[in-house]
Image (cartoon, rainbow, N blue to C red; front, side, top):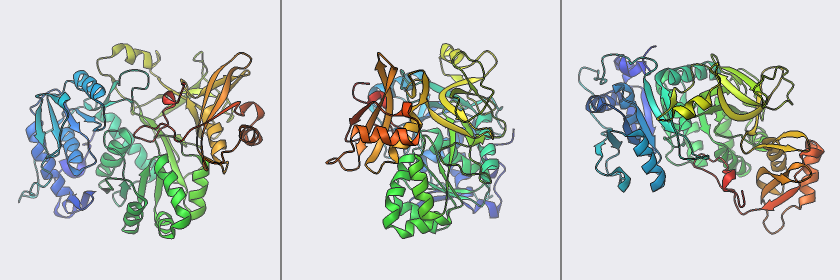
Length: 493
């Protein structure tokens, strides 16, 4: 396998070395400057052994720290700065890092104890020779762990997914094929850097291609407009961000114009409601591309840049990825009719190696012949397009003999003018097995749409058996840092 970052490890030329690599606000690094800064840090940590923790704030220092660890061949453990004391303590105990990398001035929680700390110097002078040491004189083997990324822990303490170097390379190269991603692209995003989306796709992706990334630090439509008007070609976001964009577009023609000039708009980490797709397309003439991935698998599918941008789907399997849908007994679904719901299972070079210190969980996650059980439910069209309908644990509702995905009902509810946010769950019902429950944040809290009105709205768009039987109103839906609705945190769930 070639180096993860050819532009750094091959020694940047004068021309390539002067190309912009990273920009966070008014701070930036060229490829030569990044090679120097990351190279110096890589030399310091290359002898650390074990693993290094990275205090993953949305800063230049986090990007330099992760790149340095990868150049040194030392696995990095990105840490969410918003983690609670208990969760952070669990991750540190489980991953046992030998040191922590942070930006100068960062105040670290007491959970770090006396762990050695190294502050990142992101402004190291470029060496006169035009090159920089990269911490290692070789490229580690493809199976060498690159990152240990902890899952959200919705069903217990977070598990550390060990992501090897080959998985990062395979995913980024597959996305380059699907999205026609080149060194001419300039990416803008505001995603957190402790997660696959923001860190691997959003930072390592541009660096592997030889392009550049501009991180906003904090999401805002003004920043998106500014960067797209200043030459950025791609935008990565999560549905919460695109929803805010859709809400702002009617009164912001400059934002609409900026989005219309983008080469690619990508949404991920959760399903983007069809209604938001349609509003953005109507205002900008551009369609948002969705992709599907997980911490354990990196990216599995995407709508291709040269393919049909079908709203509500996550496209087709990426090059090198095998994908199948299976019934509850594990038997594959062979007829892809756009209606048969099954669990997604995947195989390919994009998969993680194991859950750290959890051989039992690793074994349980895979079938005997190497398919990873995602726990996500989907339908697949005859032409291969995949549409996610929810999580097996929380979004598959068995009602009246039907298997129903919560996602399609949520999309239908969001098309109602009186609904701002929606979540759908199932609860026990003596007659139906489970009844469909809609959790609604009304557009006007003083005049929320009635339960019968919403039930008829859904029945008219989908089918009568998919209508909600119960409607509950909330001021807001509980969400995690990536904007995903946390259904287990709903009242009474």
